[in-house]
Picture 1 (tube, rainbow, N blue to C red):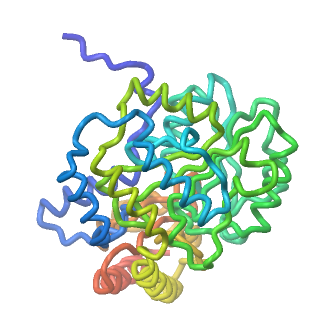
Picture 2: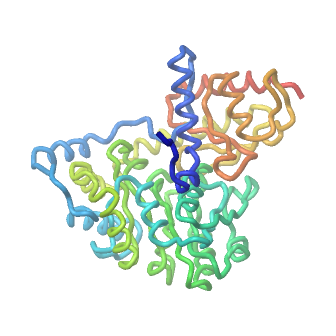
Picture 3: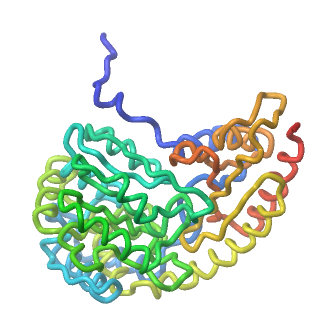
Length: 399
């Protein structure tokens, strides 16, 4: 039997975060004491009122096929949330509920990007953006940012990257992997450039909206003239600790929402009705449901910044959202260990996994090979021990 897979599959690489998590689990299964700081999942449980809403949905028999774009009342709850929190007026037919924000993003990319179209990705970018673009046949255009600019794309950088072939510009705030948050003024500057290029559609990934330590979330679609050419992507995984419920959504111009509904109808149909009804409750509760979790993350962030800054070779800024720190570790490049030489963030991540038994993710996967990503969605005890192990392992590298 021929074991040939499609050329389409060849355009995809395995998610680096998932790959590192898999390797960490394998080492754990082999008896190694691995501390995992590699996955982007809150270490909290779903809020009790949201769980009860899911249980009630089962009792109320929301167990049949739902409409492809979502139940009308759930889409309306999303509209109400967008009006309340973001100052955006959407109708229910502009909302599409999907099986996670990753699914939402894939729907949008496949609905908009043709072969040869350019997709602008400010680096560092979430690992799946590039593969989504490749799957659609698009061409990734990377805009390099660095720690000295808090890993945020400037308006001038965006202007230089835009061409007549640009179809999509990805903006992610709060950002994964850097934790950076664009201010209102920075969003306004990006919007001013985008308005000069009416052929380009912005995708604003706001999945970490409620984990924002500035208390001032800026939505790109809220900028003048941007709502009709911006797709806002959000969901419940991060802000409500609902990763396993698998619900994301888009708010978009109606023609894009209709395109995503058409595509989704052939891939998955509607997302879980039980999860949708829990999401309805989460939308109504809003950021108040995330207050305690956000406070815990802020405390951990400050602890990790202090600990990492004390380690030789780690340059650390102050991320204003999400639950990641993205230190520049290029000062360690050229140092050696028994297994080889550190030449990239990936090399350091692999060394730390073996020598310190701490799982991180190399920045190469995010388009920033000078860095590594550490998630502080772990207990205080695990974080303290991870810092001790990392400091020891780095100290054992030879200059």
